[in-house]
Each structure stands twice: as C-alpha cells, then as structure tokens.
Amino acid sequence: MRFIGIDPSTKTGFVAVDEHGQVLKAKELTGVGDKDPRRMITLIDESMNYMRKGDQIAIEGFGFATQQGIQLGGIGWGIRMALVRRGFKYYEVAPNAVKKFVGATGWTGEVGNKKRLTGPQKKKAVMAAVQDHYGFSHKSDNIVDAYILAQIARLIYQYDKPDFIGCPTYQAEVVATILGIDNKRLTHNTLF
Image 1 (tube, rainbow, N blue to C red):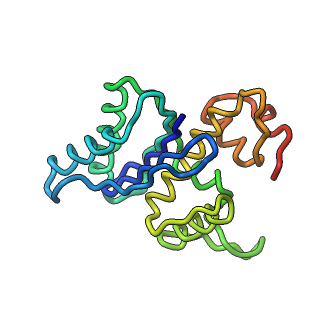
Image 2: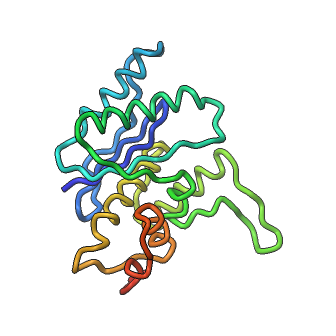
C-alpha cells in the first residue's frame, strides 16, 4: 500500500510513503522545457507515470492568493482530470489544512504580540514543523508539502482500522474536515 501526496505547481511535489510512513519516492516534477502547454502536458504525464494501482492520494487544494492562478489552475485541474481518467480517487486538502496538520499556524510571537508569517518565513515554519513531527526534511517546500499530504492520505486510510492508535487533535480536525466526520473517533488513544 502506498500513500501519495501531490502538491500541484509549476514545480509539483510528489511523495509516496508506505504504511509505516517511510518515504518510497520524493521528487519535484517540472515537465519538459519552459513553453506551455507542452511543459504542462509533460508535467501532468510525469505525475501519472509515478502512480500505481491501489495508491491512496491526497492533493493540495487550490490557493486563492497566488499571482500564477491561471497557470496553477491548469496544472492542478490537469492532474485531477488525469487521476480521474485513470480511475484514481483522491482527497482534496485545503492549503491551510496542510499547514495545520503539522501544527504550523502561520504566526510567530507571544499572545498579544503575534506577527503573521508570510512567503519564505511561512514555508520555513512548515518545514521546521515537518522535521519536528516526522524527522523528514527536504530543500524543496513543494516536496515537504507533498510529504504532509502523503501523511494525511495515510491517516485517512488508517482512521477506521481496529488497530488505529489515534493522532493529535489538530490532525484529527484536519482529517475529520476532509472526510466530513466527527473527530472524536480519531483522537482516542492519542500518543502525542
């Protein structure tokens, strides 16, 4: 069983982990060349080349505050259409939920004196949170986001199994929102 995280972008993050959360594949996909639509087509095809029957997939949802909205929308929808065309189901994960899953709030400082993190600061905070939670690091924030998505797919798969051991409340809230369920079942026997 593989759990796949896809962070669609001009540099698409792709991560596959096994049932224990160990990385099987971590790659940043860019397609061929720098001219669209060829680059986008080859990027989407490259993404599909790594898919295997039975993969459990989580893909990052669309961000609304991007300067490249049309281009990223084309890549994001292209990957989704290719997944559906090949018979894959996937879970859509909001960008803020990806960060919340590892406890990254997007803020720094003490209560009453907080400052919003932006751009590279926010990405570094997420990368640090992933390192703290899972011991995983990578120079690409796209791969780090894809890693989080793969862990979300893994938790979604495990949540209703008899041997499920629980998870932190903030992770349970993310999964419950994605699945549209009550998060009480997810937080029993929490080890964190």
